[in-house]
Image (cartoon, rainbow, N blue to C red):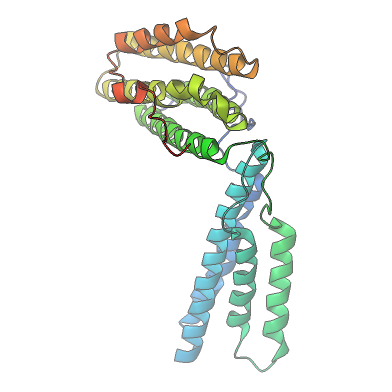
Length: 304
C-alpha cells in the first residue's frame, strides 16, 4: 500500500511529525537511543565464542549474556529516569536499573577478557567499562520528588488510571498506524500528546482525579474504540465521509481534553461539567458504547 510522504518540512507537518519531541512526546530520548551501542558492544563476544575451547566458549557466552542484560537494564533505567524527570511529582524507581547495569557491564567485560596471559587486563577492562557506563548514563534517581504533600494512596490510584489511559492511547496509535493514513496517524499522535498533558496535571495533583477520571478511562476507551472502528473501515474501503467524521471527533476530543486540563490547572473543576455530557453524546453518535461501570464512582475504601 502506497503511503503519502510526510515529514518535518512537509506542507502539513504538525508537532507530531516535525521531529521535535515535545514534553509529552513518547519518542525515545537521545540517551535512550544511545543504549543501542551497548547491544553492539556485546555482539563481538557472541561471534568470538564459537572459535574457542569449551571453557572459553562458556566464558565468552556468559560475558555476552551479561552485556545483553546490562544493555536491556540500561534502556529500561533511562526510560524510568526520563519519566521521572518529566514529572514534577514522582517516586524514585523501585529498582536501580542503571546502577545494576554498570555492575553487569563491568562483570561482562571482565569475564570476556578472562583466561588470557595478562591477569590484570580483565580487571582493568571491567573498571574502564564501568566508568564509561557511569559517565554515559549516570545513576538512577535516588529519592522521591514533590511527594511530601501527596497522599500515597491517592497517588497509587492516579497511577492505575494513568496506566490504563496509556494502554488506550497505545491502542489508538497502533490502530491509526494500521489504517495506513499518515495524516490520521499524525492527528492521533497530536491528540495523545494533549491527553498526556492531562495525565501530568492529575499526577501533579491527585485531588484532580475525581474531576478527570472519566477522561482518563471512559472517554479514552471510547476514543480507542472509535479509532479501531475507523481503521477497520478504512482498510476495507476508502470512505472519505467516515474519515471526515473521525477527524472531527478527534478535534472535539482534543478540545475537551485541553479544556479540562486548563480548568484543572486553574482549579475550576465545575465549569466543564456540561462538556462532559456533550463529549459523551458525541462518542455515542459515532457508535461507541461507553462502559457504564467505568463511569461510575469508585467505592470508598473502608480503610481510609
